[in-house]
Image (cartoon, rainbow, N blue to C red; front, side, top):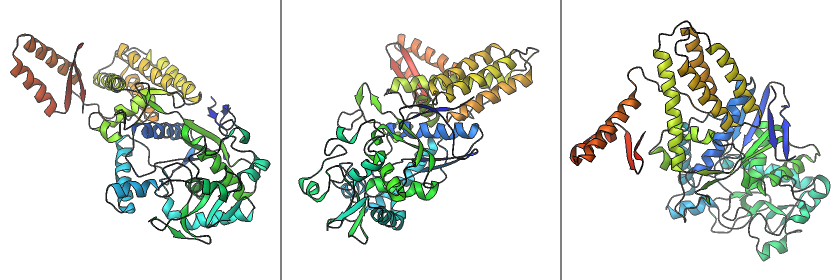
Length: 479
């Protein structure tokens, strides 16, 4: 079977063929570490985690780099505004690097809770300042950048004439508007050769805290420069896959591409496949703190296990617009419980003399791989797992070695989606017991014996089982 991935650069699915037959090099744009990871960030990281896991399962040696941005990402996402880290640190009355240290620790904890694989390298922008300055020098030497009053700009028009820009977002340079990547001041426009030019190195204002000496000024790198430098350092001047969110399709990734090609002065594309995930909406609206529909990973982990969240993410395709809801999380929780219940029943079964599972195992593995080969179609892959789970339940009288093989296959395929299915415990079906307790509680409530009914709920809460009353009856989930 052949893996096909949707390449944003060409606008179509393409057969995946790595530069090296056995090794795949991936760069993923990571967190700007000034604030907590939200559900949209997590969905994107989960998509690239699944990509990593699936390629590894297919037999490739994957080298995966995800950066941490701790300087240079300005509030206007272009060359204007305040550094996001500095602004957040000031509001919290912390030193910028103090905030960064706290946030990085939290980010790693939450990534672990979501069962994300450890990346080979998580480079920080502030740790690569020497390389960034040298990178800018090389771009200038090749004639693709110029300096104005201590700030260095990339010459977009010259690059476009030779290599095409922005290209990734399916537009031409004539389609772009001034300030398309963020607000642009009148003074800045006057300094540039073209209003579309973007900053590689920015001269710092006197009050700016994070700044470094360079041949041009005491300043700091442009946001786009960081990823070019770190991807090239760890993956080489040409590598296999670059991933990010749909907001990176312009201007971040076109600017990265321009910098990489301008630095080498080459016509060969620096990245073979560009992959982008779609945003999450909440109840049909863009997630926003001001609208009160903003969910952080920390919020969700208070009520749901990280594995439930991963099951939820796997239920939508990385390139599809997905609408986040707590009801969706509850459904993911129920799906996960069904898988766990299947494993428990299969492991506790004494088996029999049936052999139907062998064909079902082979069919499931083939169907799962076909789904994943189709641009990582995780919703279809999840449906294959759920169908296989039902088949196992119907064939508990199969030979014990086949039951064990089926459980092993279920766990193996689930692991590709970030589910480790390791929490199965021997003994009675806890889910059934809890449901029966809640039925007793409902009968007590009907009899107006509220004190005893409340005690059942409180005792369950103490055991980590959250109970919610709804018009359709009580619902519960493990905290």
